Image (cartoon, rainbow, N blue to C red; front, side, top):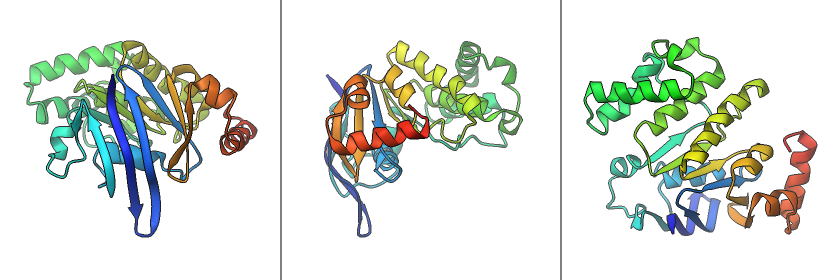
Length: 247
């Protein structure tokens, strides 16, 4: 059964059509990976799912509820969706622990003791407990991104969106971020991931979608889309990624 259903989604910025008649099903407890060149619509799609962008047409449904309905309260929807950006977006004036505890306290109305239990458990699990009282600028880029992911799952979301979470990192730090995503995959977290890391996509994806000019041109398993693409546009993209060393 699909946790996320998108039907004929369209999104434009002025005369620039960014998403065109895009349809996507994301089964519960699965990882869907979006690949495609910069400007293909991957990030805009994630922002539309999280209601950060208003759509022009189509339907976005989560748990069989149309969240793209203008009558929906975006804040209520975002309690069910976690989103992690490539630029971390941690609050610099808050410690690591405070960043993680903010949403459980402010959004879910948990008391400070319960929020502390959540943050402690997650920080210990992902080997960042010793950084709990430090500020983000004292962390490496990889550590900051891991904290951003922990913050997004502290509210136990139904769906996790990851937007190029390794693109701002030194290659040496990429694996420590991808390891936490692999752990979440093993936990059964439902995820939609935009990435340029084809090797990572091969490891975690249940479904790979190749986007080009705002449409899904090919979808299937990682083996099908990345290792044996059928469409010429997909083959061309994969060849270019291979030449860049990301495959």
